[in-house]
Amino acid sequence: MRGHFQAIHLSKIWPITLATEAGVFRVENGVFTECIAAPARELPNGRALLRSLFTRKHYLFEKYNGRNWAVPDVGEFTHIIVHYPALLEFVRGKRGLTADVIFDTHNNEREYFESVAARTAGFAKPIFIRRQASISERIIKQAAANIDATVSVSESDREWVAGLCSSQTRHFVVPNNLFRYEPTTWTGRKSVLYVGSLNVNMNLQALEWFTTRVWPALKESAPEVDFIVAGRNPAVGLVSDLERKGIQVVANAPSLTGLYADAMFSVIPAASGSGGKIKVGEALAHGVPVLTTAQGLVGQPAAIRECCIVNDDPGEWVSIIREHLGREERSSKLWDAKVENALTETYFGSSIMQIAGFIGA
Image (cartoon, rainbow, N blue to C red; front, side, top):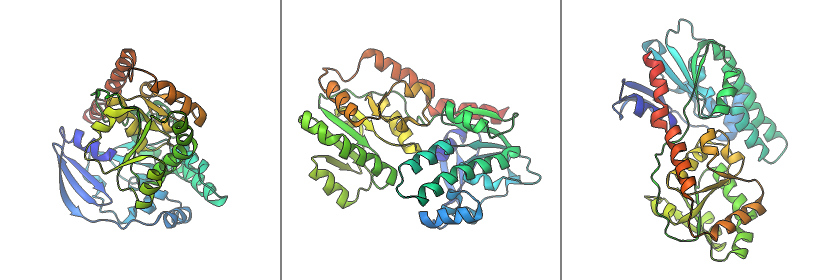
């Protein structure tokens, strides 16, 4: 989705061609028109992981069947934005490549795969997952001669990729903050909110951490608190299990504004990932304090990190939420101003103009 948002903003200046696993699209003034419908067959996770180890290509390149994408001739373009290390295959080692290549990392993949491996059971699978970080870094180094600029979501991610590129490469930070500050007025309800797609394994792991290690003690010590889980496409069994624990599930809500207005806290007990990064910004934009783990803030810019409450101890989470429930106001005016400044500083629509400036130079 980050590539789509970039296309929307940049297409207001220049026409954009967007190549994806679903086909090729022309984008002008934010409007997408399909040029080639050529969906590539997605591979199962396990098969894609094994295949990547044999081919020495990135896991995502195999999962989304990159070799069968309908990618236009790169010689037709003056600038090419490549998303993820996986897709550097399309420009790596290309002879006669005259276009400037801008590489959007999305994540520090060393940090990302290490965090995923740390939560993965077994002996062999974590090793395979960690190896993906080395594959990512090798691909970037091999493509370094073709990379003119990079785009990262945070300062720490920028430092990671800069260490893999040539000294002539330019580096920009464009955070995953898609929101302006539009705070809701708190309704006074004592509720805690979790938002995330409920068919994504990483989100389910994060939710399980909260419901098993925090929620029972919180509900026992503060019976007045409500826990609301909102997200897309939850399995029937998941909904039943959560409801048995006294948790309200809101599936496929057309709007989250009312839920954020009710919430005293938004909890994000997640590891790194672009979805989690977006949800942090979304909660702050609605004026809702965010409680998360150190892993939940991986890849966030410093301005956003400083607005969040960070703790890895489940018992401390219970204490923090209980203390907050006793307040008459959801947040302070000082915190509100800090959040507004952070969101203004990191807003995607503003920071992406750095890339427009590089392209137009």
